Amino acid sequence: MGDFGTILKTTDGGLSWKTQGAPSFTGVFSVDFPFDAITGYAVGGTGILKTSDGGENWVDQDINAGLSTVQFPVDVQTGFALGGGGAILKTTDGGTTFVEDEAEKQKGIFRPGLTVNTLPNPFSEKTEVRFQLKQPASVKIAVYNILGQFVRLLASGPQKAGTSEVSWNGIDEHGTVVSAGAYFVICEAKGSQVIKKIVLIR
Image (cartoon, rainbow, N blue to C red; front, side, top):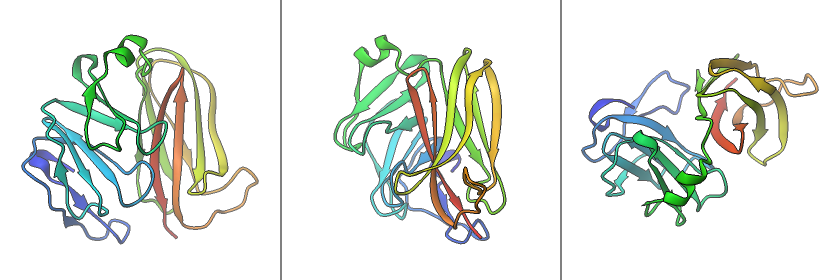
């Protein structure tokens, strides 16, 4: 992802990249496939893009707002897009439409400002889970497989404000090397939840 709506896709662990079809778009800041490899969202300086074919094509959701991240913490239908100035948009139809949600903004459900990135992704030996808090909070970070089964706990307990990181080396809670495939890193802090899909290659 990058400036002017550039979105690239790899299917060989990053050895080669293919430009994806996307409409004119300013500054893609985040791309996420929250529940499967087919339906995904990209957010940036001028709104939200959605794909329903694994990223081959992207459709502008016609939302004129600068956004930095999109999350689906509950289910595939209910999601939130976050932007500057504390803006929160909500969808209840799987991302087809987003509307400003003043009630959620007032509740502050995304405090204490949890943001998460995983690098490298895909990975073969180890991936770093880098998370940032705007204020101190108790944080839980765990890995789950695509069936929703617990794999390994990476962090649990109080964390200071700022940027911290933990790593995962593809080994489960029992010390067993897990198989290649897709996994989910779920990060929670004071009611906030961020889900990141990671791919382990062998």
